[in-house]
Length: 546
View 1 (tube, rainbow, N blue to C red):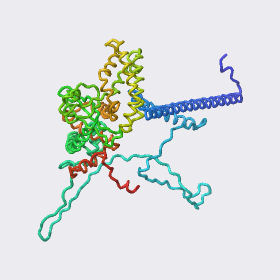
View 2 (tube, helix red, strand yellow):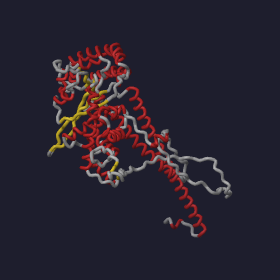
View 3 (tube, one colour):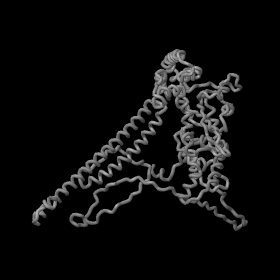
């Protein structure tokens, strides 16, 4: 017997059977839609929770960094990873929430995602009011007797695309009816002789190249897409001309930095384009930063370029310097520490971050190529971190106060550390990795402990490493310097940008203002253009807001 044979023969029974089956199908579809909505709702909730957790993890890590300083060399990478994770989870949560809202619109309860509070838009931004006309008649009774009782304002952040313009400077000519002579106002100063680019455009080109690591060819392509054709060679001409114009300011920075009693020094490799290959040049930086011991002098950084890493280069850079140099154990600095040096010996101050890093690499499982960790290296890291914790407490205090704390609390710790390190070193083979880490510090122990006798000396050379960080990140974008002259130009502009950042000055508007003024600025008052003396020019909008 088939299924057809089971159907009733009369029409009324068939109709009732079809209606019952249709009701079953409608009920099944409704149940399926409700299940899909519940799944979408649950997925949105999970995504929102994950984004919230990532947000709080990032906030906690930032608070720990602010309270306790960088806990390890992985700290910066950890924050970058957390920010990237938060970015992805926020995007996923928003996408899932929109899906849940779409599904829930006709089925179950709506999902409202819990978001972190957004700060209000900055008050200094201009506001543009777009008024949506209200009703002209009552939607309820149709009466036109309406009275305004208030308004609701919804703010949306928008950006205006970059606007290019050509400034025409018109100088009218007049002739004298009496003597027939012709008079005319003098031509305005240009940043570059017979130049065509304004100071804001030049500052943008410089900052994009050296501050944002955008090579000139990429800038040229982007400007062309905006309708302004500026060739690569044209932009390169402006960079060279601006570097020449700004060189006196660079020299003023150099004098300021080497007038300090204590500076930080470091270098980083720079690939340089050569025929058929690339070779490795070096960018050297020397940083003056007296803020850790409450010094009144403003911070500054100066860069130098050299085609190689021979020791004669730092000897030339520091030929007139006879203070304290905080640096790593680079052998090229050794002649500077020589007591027979004509200008007087430079005092060597070791970097505890370098010494700690060698132990940390043996104690951190994330950096080990094998699972076996060194308990001796871990103990060394713990002992060194105790010293770092005390140093964070006295950061920013006067040199005398720092020295007193070091003598009272740090000196006993270092005496114990040295005795422990020499005892452990005697038990190790000279080929052991931990032994090499011990030797790095013990053979330079006077340089590592000189900070106990001078409150101005810092525990690390991180100031110089921070100045070089931008270059290390930028190498991925610009790949190599075009020539040795290109490296020298980079050193000039890097010095200006790094110094502006050290003084909490936005480099691009500062460079624009300096380029606009430097042509007719008295050379005897050049210091007025340095970042720590600079004040942002008041714009029309700023004046109106005040």
